Structures are given as C-alpha cells and as structure tokens.
Length: 224
Image (cartoon, rainbow, N blue to C red; front, side, top):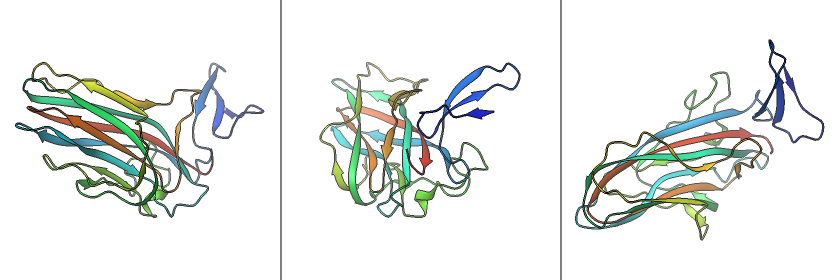
C-alpha cells in the first residue's frame, strides 16, 4: 500500500509492507500510468592507440528539443566499467561526464541504441519512452579508434564527475561498475529537460588497448 506524506514532493512515497506493516521509503515517477523507469547499457570500443594518444566522446544521451516542456528525465545513475587488453608505459586514461545544454541535433557516428518498444523498461507494463518519438538519442562509440561526433549544443566547462585509471598491466574486465553519478534516496537526481543531454568523454595516453561499458538508469516524469 502506498502513502504520500503531507508536504512531500510529488514522486516520493512511503509504502507499507503487507505482512509486517513496516514502512519502506521509495522514490519513483509521479505517474506510472503514462511514464516509467528505464535502463540502457552497452560496450564501447575497443580503442587501440598503440603509437598515439586519443581524446573523444564514447557515449551520449540526448533529450530532444521538441519534447513537451512538462516532460523531464530524472537520471538516477550513470556508471561505467572497462577492460584493458594491452598496456604500454606512461599510459593513463581519464573519463569525464559532461552536461550538454541547448542542443539542437544528435551526435553522429557509432551505434544508436534501441530504446523503442519494451527495450529498457524496468517493468513491461510501462509505456515506451516518450523521447524516442521526438528524436532523442542514446549513442555508443562502436568503431575502433573513432570517437563520436559531438552533439550540437553548449557543453559545460567542467564535468560533473570524472575518474582516472592508471593501468599497470593488461587486466581482465573490471568486475565493478564505477558510478559517475548516482542519486541515492533523499538526494536530488540529475534532471534533463528538452534539449539537454549527457556526454561521456575519455582522454587516453599512449600504448593502451581498452574498451568501456556504460550503465544508465533514469525515470521519465511529467514534472519533478
């Protein structure tokens, strides 16, 4: 049974366990009939840079400019993992997560992930993602050594998150997802409105061969 405490923002509720009558706090979309929660993931690369460094974009998420003004996307988590197939000296790679604002066009290259129909739904009865209708985009780099073309828009001067990874040897795939952004219970999620998006970039030193994977969890809401 779901309860909404007085004074609590839309989308936040308290559920009561049927058997124990214990309260369980949850955060979810304000209108499950029309929208829902979704997840996408996939690999990017490999990036084989023996002989030279490389910098570029390897994952993009864009909410279309024509999306209704009262529709927003609440990003709960952006996380990544990697593998390092070969290693050479003086090699470090850095991953940055940027917000891109006032976009007018999707990026180019790579592969556009399928988000239509039931793909990515966290419950089959949820509606398909609305941003697909308006021309939204989830894109991964999938061609060796070829970064994605940039979205047309204004990228923030600084990333909202980043990490460095200095491989010492060739390594198997990381067993862990590294959270670039994660909104825990009670924390404000990253809200993307029409024409806004995310860009995950990498900067890599020389003599390394690696690939990366992405995990994105988000809600589609009427308002937040």
